[in-house]
Length: 276
Image (cartoon, rainbow, N blue to C red):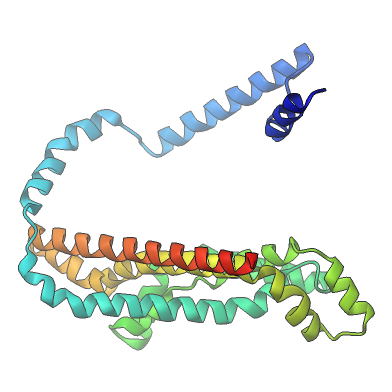
């Protein structure tokens, strides 16, 4: 086999193998039929109707026409809510990281032999991830009142971050851990010198992504009284001031794009640092 054939083999090594018998083709056909049935069943349950969407296009066009041009005169009024949204996202992300780190070490299967504790922690993280931010925002608004603080508490990225942190730990090279254990290192030393150096780049990338998600979620949480730009957005919608709504949407979009550009720059700097 020549080098070109080897390259082609490497390129396609993760694709499905070609069936070599009639039974294999029948299995693929049955799988395709099952996928098609699931898609049809889910479309029926979701009441997907392209005709209704087409019939509603005039209403969408009417909303867009009423939103143009945006009301730029309200921009000075949006500076404080925009900064508040950023502050909510920063503290929501920070609290998520602080809570997720210890849970990720417990949830990782290659750091300890307490399998029962790992299973309990994994199930706890599943429960945490199943609770939507809006539900938590309503709970915390009723507990601590209106404002940005319930928004910070509701941005519970702990479940997602702990899951990704634990999976990153489980994928590391076990050699340094075994060497540290053989040298008599404590569990804390193993984590500090064997685990963290191998996962820190992946962790930072996940945290930056979570910050972007929290920035978008913080704008939605304002709709239930958790402060930020969402409050201004829902207020303009309720008063049918669609030009103000368009301005709020533009500001939110610019914030998300800026956060994405900043996180991409930070990730590239971190990757360059790890190469040198």
